[in-house]
Length: 104
Ligand code: FES
Image (cartoon, rainbow, N blue to C red; front, top):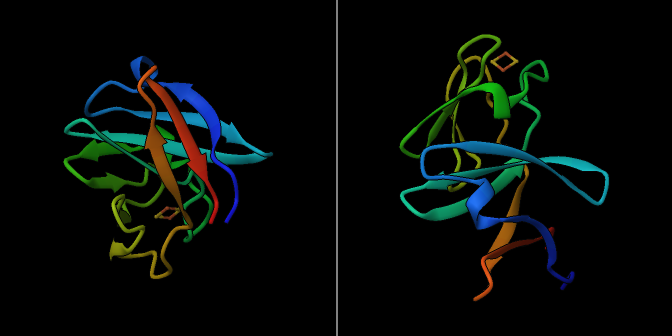
């Protein structure tokens, strides 16, 4: 299993917001859904829209390009045009409020 790496502080990802971070060269979006952090690829599987620039409503992010939607808790595409799921990452938040993610 890959190690967890700090990518942000919890204060940088307020509830209802998405924050873009770098994870080992990959652009990863962090979403705060009612206090729980989820991490997923920032790149829409349709035509590479930037999901960190999209709208987060509950656990659903809407792509700013063509309105495709994904469930950030699973990465599954839930509204067309995208059909492929997003890459997701494991997340942990330590006692110091550091958000750490792992690819495996
Ligand atoms: S690029 Fe995201 S819906 Fe088209």
